[in-house]
Image (cartoon, rainbow, N blue to C red; front, side):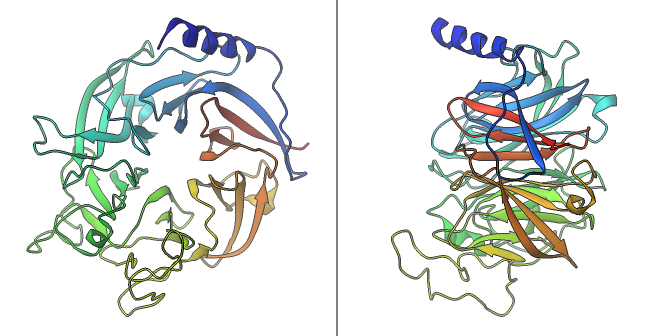
Length: 379
């Protein structure tokens, strides 16, 4: 980063010492508070205690935000990241025992190297320890690399969820032009995978021991999942980008097929059927909910608290990159029964949404001067 850019970021951080800015929004249940701005295309956030928040920037940096203080300098110790198109430094979460072990997990686009061999790029998942002085990552270990690597700037997926059994889910995109791979088991394109925290494969994964199948695979037939969370039912919930229409919410289960690209409610960019134009087929799962036209969903969080009133407890929140709002979805019996569009005047792409330790929702906006925003109850 050049001196001018550094000075611009420092000035923007200092401005955060002033009272929080209010944004126009469309729900009387909310007020908004900007905690940080001038972030470079932020992608994900994780809470690390004492009011501090870890933020990834797609351009390859990881920083710490603490309300009322300047945004930190980039943390050192990250592996080499291939930045370009939709690729870069993407999701980050903290281990469930972070207070004890200071472990984080992050995923990113990894180019081929002497360790992986071959050429091209793919999604990788790594673990690391956050140093006590909050300045660097230590003991970095690559736990998983998507195979095969392929030269593409699109559809990396890359959302991480820790399951209650201490295993990790990771969503993986179909790499755009390799969409047919989503239906075969000899690759990781268009899949959800599940591994242990040391990178090994759980023996109860559905394809362990099956000839020609990669053992990390949990479910298949996905396009590009950029939202994932554990639901109130303790199960994995994801959403994925459709092509032109057909964005989906799914609940991936072991060994099941979610249809892409054989079935979809979307169509080719510019129009026209994808494949045979089917929306149903035996042996393939239907989405729990779908958007046509596409909203370009990103980020996903269930609200457990009652900070916004009991009516919002258990609701699902998803950001829209295309229409630049936050969707609130009411659920009943595992199905979406109502959708409300919040922050309709935000005018920024919503990339991530998380519930904080304080029971409030936090969002990141995917812009060249992106913001970290806390959503406050109106009263």
